[in-house]
Length: 116
Length: 117
Image 1: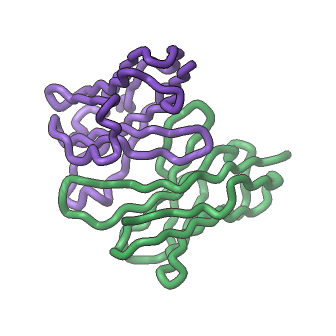
Image 2 (image 1 turned 135 degrees about the vertical axis):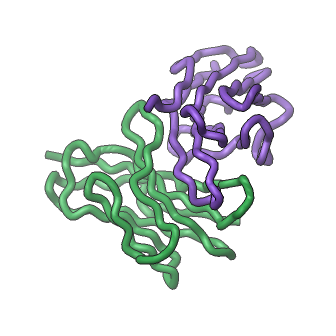
């Protein structure tokens, strides 16, 4: 079974500052890793995902994440945030499966608040 | 392309009442998921359908929750009877069926916020 820990429940930063949202996972098998964003009163939207290959993954809205297998981490970064990045961010993991099941396990979320 | 549609957006009921939520996935998406998101937590998978068959319902409280996906398109999730701890946002998601299904992107609807009094 997989599990995800998001180390910060809330992260306040100033506009145009860099930000890092931390995510650690636990799994006994190879995994796929995802970051989803949830804006107020909306569903979740995929930011980026790591499947294989380069450990640095680039996503939408200027976000990127780095897969570190030895540290079992998948931290999300953005070099300069905007007010519009204010949202809840969820890290998620699933084990590899060739069958029809994708059982995503989500972390508890990190609320990113951008202050002017 | 239209997104995942859900209704109603909000529902308030009293405990022991029943409630139903509806979801219409993105056209052509074979896989449909229902999640429960309790305030302050990440979504938790309740049930997953592949076309109109259940793939995983291991975390569905089957004594009170039921779900169906007739004709492999839209789906209904029902709670009967509701308890206070069922207060949450119920999210529906869909994904296209690809060979490596576990790598799929899920597309989420806006959710239904349920309050049980």
